[in-house]
Image 1 (spheres, one colour):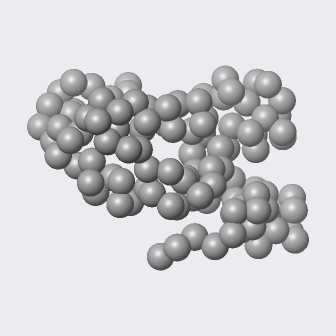
Image 2: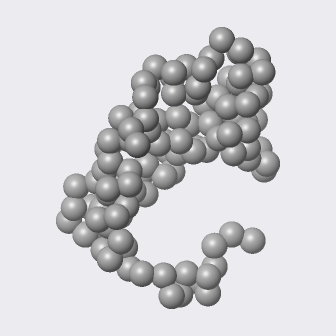
Image 3: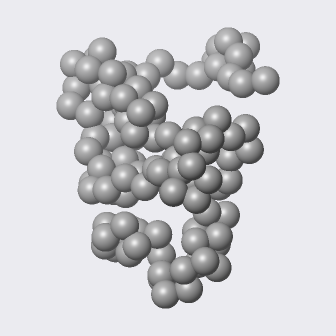
Amino acid sequence: MGITREAVSSAPAFHEVADKIYATLNGRIWAGHNIQRFDCVRIKESFAEIGRQAPEPVGVIDSLGVLTEKFGRRAGNMKVHKSLAQIAQCQLLHYPQMATLADYFGLGQQKA
């Protein structure tokens, strides 16, 4: 189904929430599926459109890479996406020595 115009018709304009988005994302670890080729690009474009510096992550965990390692190139075409918690749980089952995905990727501790 996806996002519809109707669903976002009353949403605030980006410039109205940019400060909050920046404060939430800057200096943190970002995680998502295909985040490097989609979300990171859209975030930079959105901030550039309003003449603002985009937030910068201290690290990025892209589940597409994790799934590609496990399932090969078809991982990018999978219709069922796992949440980060599910991916972490799966990784911990296969690699019990990992305390967290952030530790596994060498990204250190997330700030509060």
